[in-house]
Image (cartoon, rainbow, N blue to C red; front, side):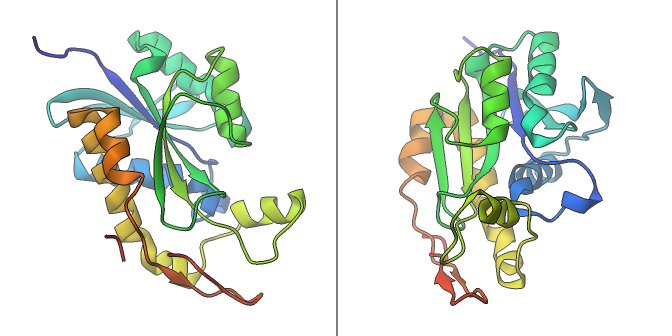
Length: 214
């Protein structure tokens, strides 16, 4: 039988030009990549989000970018899901992850917040973490410690070296989303969670190697 369920894909980030190129907005960037690839116009402004509907590999989707700040992004996603009668098991959230090496992807089905304010907000809104996640690694600076340093890193703009690497990373994220939709979450995990990356990023504080996609 055909699968008529609608999927909701939500890319997380902070709204406004100030945050456009920051590491914390990797989810927004991935959503924009998906929108461009599948001609999905994010022109509906409702429920505290920009979103649009489309079809990806025969699967009907709602693609959304919440327009409240990251720590309040759960409510817009919840309202969209409620409006379209989408179960939390049919939601895929795309977000940055400081604990993953720069450029790495990790797909996860359900789980905790991992210290991510956006995921915490979603977990609160849905009364649990019964939604899938695509995590995009943004890495850490060498010698980074303390909450202030973490905040500075995630809210900082991608470096020139990182920016040069973003296109293949976002293409990889797009491929991961298509795989999840068309082949299932387990196939996505098997294919992308072990995929190696080899981006070499230099930082002023001594440098660190991130890890071409293989």
